[in-house]
Structure formats: structure tokens, C-alpha cells
Length: 195
Image (cartoon, helix red, strand yellow):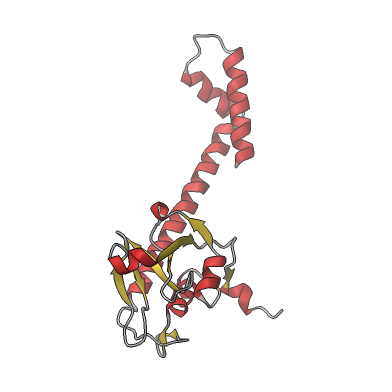
């Protein structure tokens, strides 16, 4: 995409220098169309919009899927609705089921395998990490929007949504991450292939 953008800038700059002062935007549009650049630029724009729409759709689907597990009990080492989930097992299962990406098993490994983002950049589907066991990245949840996250908290409790602004979570907030297929996550299909 950047190659086309650079080419477009070069054509525009060249045309701007060579064109008389009376040239208008119709002349520029005609030039871009004649060179085939307008169509290419539109195609790139549509591809970017489609990709952004797809990512937003996946995040929305991920959050909706996760909400379907509200009330499932916590189980240390658990990774299914039948047995219950621990925090990282829940996050891993949601990403595998909804997006088709297989995250590492432990919360600290998930933090290391995903893209660091600022808390202000959080979007639904991003991961939020907390220091709940006197060590960094010992707890993970999925951000659902409006400063809230869904997670499997601890023994004796169930998957639930909580507010990150509550003093307990605010003090223990450890970082935000975005899951991208280019980071440490692998597709479920890749993980299933024999090595």
C-alpha cells in the first residue's frame, strides 16, 4: 500500500509543478483516472476498509462469545466450559473458538506473545493483565469496552464482568495487549498440523 501512496504523491507533486495555476480538481481526477491510479487507490482503500471491518467484527464476535460463558465456574488449570476455566484458559479458549488463533497457555506467556498497547488504546477484544499474585501478568481478562473486562477470577467464583476502575483492579493493572496473528499467536489450523 505504501508504494501506491508514494507513487500517488509523486504524480501529484509532478502535476502540481507542471500544471498551470488555473488547474482544478477535475483535471487532477482526470489525470489520476487516465493513469489508472484512481482505481488502484480506490481498491487499496476498499481493502483497508474491509480489513478494518473484519477485525472489528471479530472483536465484537469475541466479546459476544465470551459473554455466553458468564456464570461458568473457575477451575484452576481449566480450559473448557465442561470443566470450568482459569483466567488464561478462558482467554485462550475464546480466541481459539472465535478468531481461530491459539494463544499460549499461561497469562504471562500471553502477555509476552501479544502486542503492547497503551491503556487509552483499549478496544473490545484486547487483553488486560493484572498483578494478583505478587508477580507481573499473573491474571488476564478480555476487555469488553466502557472500562470493563470479562474474566474467570478465582476459586469459588464464576466468569463475570468487572469494572477496571474499582480500586482492587486499578491498583493491580499491569498492562494492555492486542492479539495479532503476526505476534506469538498461531492459527488453530497451523497448531493442528504435525511438526
